[in-house]
Image (cartoon, rainbow, N blue to C red; front, top):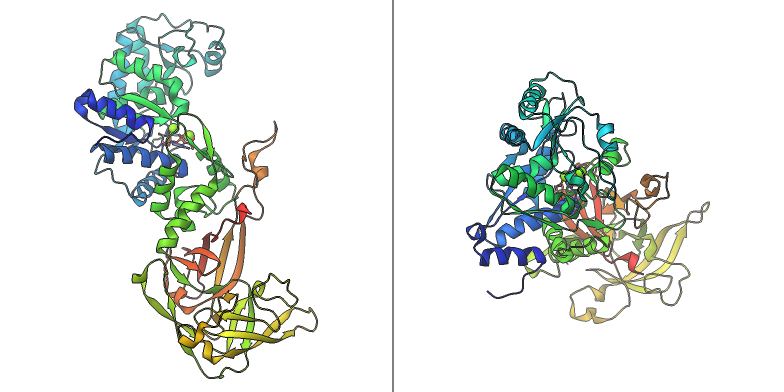
Length: 552
Ligand code: ATP
Ligand code: MG
Ligand code: MG
């Protein structure tokens, strides 16, 4: 195969394979910290890591980066496992936890101490920060920097034994307080935290920092290509330093630009804040950019994987239009979604010349994109509901829907003509639209060829099932919600109208559905059954409208 690699990461990997590096092996990992639910940015990373392994016949591990007991929880572990599987990827039993490596990482730390490459420092966090210097001014060396290896070993063992309170001491790497790279100025490797860990309980009271845990975990697992986001580029010298000083297998860290999306915040910290303060109903609120939120909204795994491919892998930060994600789900659901009829803003329509006791079963196409999906029967009667917006008493000439004296087709049924309307005497609102139908115009019959400009969807009033319909708009009103003046908060950009709950009528078919079932309500958009649905009260979420109303 002699194709150009899809992106710079694949180009690097192919180069490594050609050179026989690591025996041509490709082994990646997806390393979430279990401190929140996964979001669409993580989906990008999942697709990249698992996709790369699949492409090069390699392996991809799922590794929980659980080195901070304060923020982590099993609830998050479970949701992450679920979401990765749902997206369509499998770690084939290679599920690992950085916390499983605590004993090994501790050994590594002692090794650095014995080599004179790490020391116990008694400065407070504030003092360490103060002495760090600036990128243009060298930092100050800690007064504890020249402790002997024996003294360091003794203190470090006593840190582990629980003799010292939180924050009283840390283990630091002894590198270079004048390095132009701030991360190389004697970074902290271990800190004291007397907090129960969701896996190791109270076994440990010292915990490794990300920079000490991540590369070593990669090395222990034999990861060949450690793909991470751009902000870790400046950590790479430290990543390499640890592996070199420990003289262990050295994976290659490769950075790519994180996914940012318009009208979205994408940090677990902020998403957690929205959940905790009830700005949304939970991590899986259909307005959230979380994988669980997108799933509940009606997104398919395929649409998210396709989005991830289209976004590509960049070396520079950029912001992707959320419209691209919507395009991807629309495209996928257009191929797959069952079509049904539902009326969101109903007004009664009565066909005066249609027999009162008659019900016709109209054959309706389940999916015009997929003939195999077949047809279903939709009951048609004298009294129907149509959308209020599909009627105008005094329409402009370009209005091709229903109006007094005008004709339209009722989908899968007849051509009707509006004869009169009935209004509420007090409010003036139209309560009934009276029509006549032409029996010769039944859809599918040869005589039905007569053309009219508009076709409307409808529901038989006697058969209509009342449903709660949840219409979503963007959670944030501004394209870049985090772009706020000094002292203000991104939450002020929350869209107060991001959820609109209405009652509509749907054809009987829709009531036999279960959560996550997906449809197109004809002319209205793609919808899915919500997990709040019950037989008595069906609930549907609008995933996305049929066309991008924003593009206008
Ligand atoms: P957040 O800042 O949202 O909390 P994080 O990077 O702290 O995210 P992790 O659990 O550490 O979250 O992320 C797991 C993996 O997913 C990491 O390799 C990380 O680089 C990647 N990742 C996180 N956010 C994005 C994003 N927006 N785009 C691409 N990859 C991401
Ligand atoms: Mg992280
Ligand atoms: Mg984070």
